[in-house]
Amino acid sequence: MIYVAFIHRDEAPGYGISFPDFPGCVSHGDSIENAMRLGREALGFHAEGLLADGMALPAPRSVDAIMADDDLAEWREGAQIAHVPLMLDLGSPRRVNVSLDYGLLQAIDAAARARGMTRSAFLSSAARKELAGG
Image (cartoon, rainbow, N blue to C red):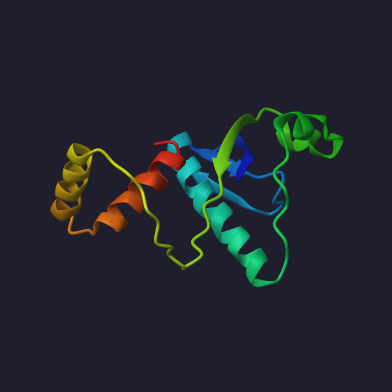
């Protein structure tokens, strides 16, 4: 799921990030990139807390729906809009079957070994980075 975030330039050096679909879920970073990274972590932590409390996650609203929400008028004033993926760590790995070019598989295995990782850990890490936009 991908949620809309507001990014505001703070009076102090840095940027704040908040999530209209998750009131109270906020973070801050000294750059937009840092605010986005910390925002992804805050969003995941907030969502995991809701689930642990037996609550459902809100459905992600579209930018159009958020821009039309009069209750958010002040909140979105001066904000840049960003899309942040929610990536929950459910702690339950699943075995999957994927097909990869043999040369790519060799490169993946070499990179994983160089980092002291398993193939699965390497692929999971790479997928998380790609889903996070960088």
